[in-house]
Length: 104
Image (cartoon, rainbow, N blue to C red):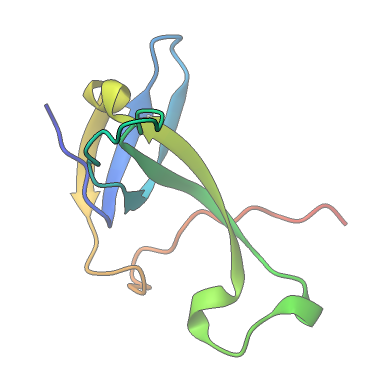
């Protein structure tokens, strides 16, 4: 089974036939069960788009100038992921992310 890693580009075709594609943004770690706490599920998030933050909320660094649209994919669904490619880092501008146009 494919184990997603941050900065992988994946296509997720769900059991219902929905097709999503984007960059793996976060991959959670397995956590041991704790007595008295609910069992935590391992998941990854897939960034399917970004849009610029409004001017008044833009931070002055490169990290926080976009709003990220993410899908949550649990470990039980990782078999539905298909690896496409890998980028060098989140800041690699050679393959830009999908941009969502704002409604004006």
